Length: 302
Image (cartoon, rainbow, N blue to C red; front, side):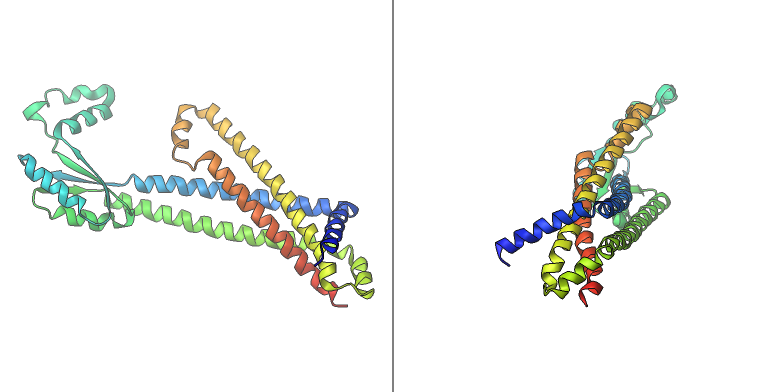
C-alpha cells in the first residue's frame, strides 16, 4: 500500500468518526460501559487472589520437640526438615520465646502465666515450617512427624483443607466470571459497531460499485473501530482509576489503621491499576478491530 493511499484512508477513518459522531458516541459509550464493568471485576478478582495467596502463604507447620534434647540433636532435626522438598522457611522457637508469644496474646490477662518461667515453663521448643505449596503441607507434616526427637506435629488439618478449598473456589469463580464478562463485552461492542456500519451501508455499496477494493473500503472502518476501542478503553480506565481511588480513600477514612493493615495483603495499588488499564486497552483495540471487520462482511459481498 502506498504512503499516499494509506494517508488518505487514515484521514477517511478519522473523518468518518466525526461525520457519524452520533453513532460514534453510542459505540464509544457502549465500549466504555462494558469495559468499566470488566475492569472493576478484574480489579476485584486480582485483589481477592492476592489476599488468597497471602492467606495460603501464612499456613505453617509447627513441629514440637521432645524435652531435654541437646543442641546438636535440635540442630540435626532442623537440618533434616530443611532438606525436605517443598520447605520454604524454617524458624526455631525456644520454650522462652513460646511463653513470651503466648503472654502477648493474652494481653491484660498475662498474669495467668505468672510462675511459669524457668523450669516451670510448660511450652515445648518447636520448629515453625513454611512451605512453597500449601497443597503439600499434609505430606510434609507427615514426613516431619516420624523424625526422631519430634513429639508432635500440628498444622490445623481441617482448617487448612477448608481454606484451600475456599481459595481454589474463589479462583475458579473469578476466572469464569471474567470469561463471561469478556464474552458479553465482545457481543455488545461488536453489535454496537455493527450499527455504525449498517448506518453507512449505502456509502459502502457505492464505493464497491465504482470499483474500490475490499481492502480500500475496509481499512477506514478498521481505523474507526480501533479508535472507538482505544477511546472507550481510555475512558473506562480513567473511571476505574477514579472509582478505585475513591474506594481506597473511603476505606482508609472509615477504618483507618485496620484498612492500612489489610491493604498490605492486597495487590499493589499502582501495579494493579496499570495492569488493568493495559488489559482494557488491549481488549478495546481487539474488539474494535474485530467488530468492524465482522460487521463489514455482508456489505462487501454486493
